[in-house]
Length: 199
Image (cartoon, rainbow, N blue to C red; front, top):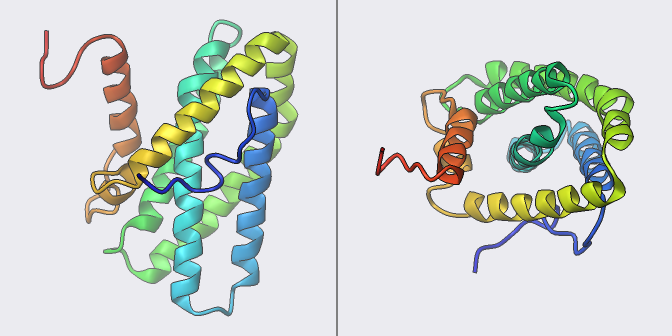
């Protein structure tokens, strides 16, 4: 059985996707605060915490992109596109941080950029995205999406624990468009098209 991180499955069920996103945002803030507190800790301790932050962010953003954004597209495609672009930028910073072939100062600079992007993104989510979601979707839709989001995070976390995980593949020496590759593969799979069996 694969080990699933506690943040991926905190035992809650039938919650609104907004409540789940708010809880995830609070966890991200807490982990960045812990990273700041460990400024003088050994590099290996900071690296482990940073790896946890990157994994959590990658899984949460991908689950959000695949569950929430399709439900919002018909209401405001430009808003969804804007948040997708920010998510792509976050994924790029995560890839830069995970790239062990980059010099430590370059990785630290990417971390500074990631923290700033996350800070701005959390504020935009709190003031723009989440109120927009609450105003457009019914309680039932919010709960359905919440269940889908929680399940998607669990599946992504399980995949991240395997040898062919996005987390491990993304640490290669060459930056990859892994996030987009995963999304495209899932999109094809959902529509019955597999790369191994093109139609």
